[in-house]
Image (cartoon, rainbow, N blue to C red):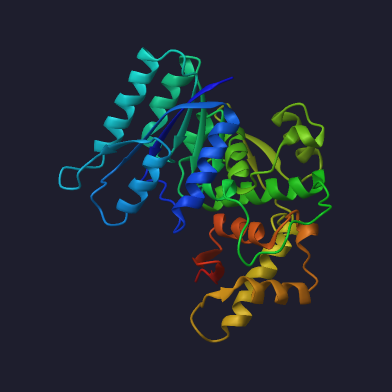
Amino acid sequence: MANISVIWDIENVTPPSNNSLFLDSLWEYAENLGRVVAAKAYADWSGPGFQKLALQLKKYHFYLVHVPSERKKKNSVDIQLVSDTLEILNLYSHIDTIVLVTGDSDFRPLLLTLRRAGKMTHVVCDIKTASQELLAIADSFVDYRDILPNEGDDEPDAPTLAAPTPDYWFSALAETVGILTKEGKPANLGTVKIRMKMLNPNFDEHHLGFGRWGDFISAAVKQGVVQLADKDGNPFLKLPDSPDNRDKGVLQKGLKALVETLGELDGIREPQFHEYSVVSNRLREKKIDMKSLGFSQFKKFIQAADVRGLVEIRSEGVNNYVKLIGV
């Protein structure tokens, strides 16, 4: 069994209003990887927003590392966290797995060091703000929302959710390449893979029968979904000059329908928050089915829109709301 150390940069990944629920979920996630033998959390614990959290963390035997606000600079937490983790590496050889709760790119050298030392690294992050370069080094990564249990006003899991087809994922690939191109970022094979996993956490090319990521890319190129090009000896992906494939998949059509529905609910007003149930019913009237989009729940579909920067999410108690992000 693996021996786990949990290292948490609180200010980079701040739990939602229900701290206990997130802590239960984080601890369960870590224990599913092995036995938790050490846990540290870093923050200014004198802040009013963290005092209650500090008490809850102590129940899980977290060691709280205090970084006072008046002394804190950008690198203060980073330096302390890196120093403590390297101490674990040097003094506690029985710890072989690190769960790092952050998405900060400054910890990329740390993950490289842990990797060279043969340690397994798993990152829990806010996928909307996490560094793609950091996630590329980790053995695995997960958005903190995906480890939370389902609750509140959401629908039950779809009982028979069919596995998405290769064509579904080819459209997701084209969408990913389009997003990177729009952002002016290189769409090299490694970057595309990480971003696609960030946008679609359940994607796994092996489940589609492809032995490697490169095999999946080759199949997509043969289908004409994307094109493989070369610049200075570096291969990258681009969309074909023919009609755009980003909006052709069922998921992309569903996301487009969501944006249109929220716009209809807003009318001539500025974007407003709308209850999940209201939006879900409107989409159902338009014959938009979550199961056909590849989601077991409406909440997961909204999270997919959120991570793409299309909507904003807000929770109040057990009620969830979504708002169109103005363009």
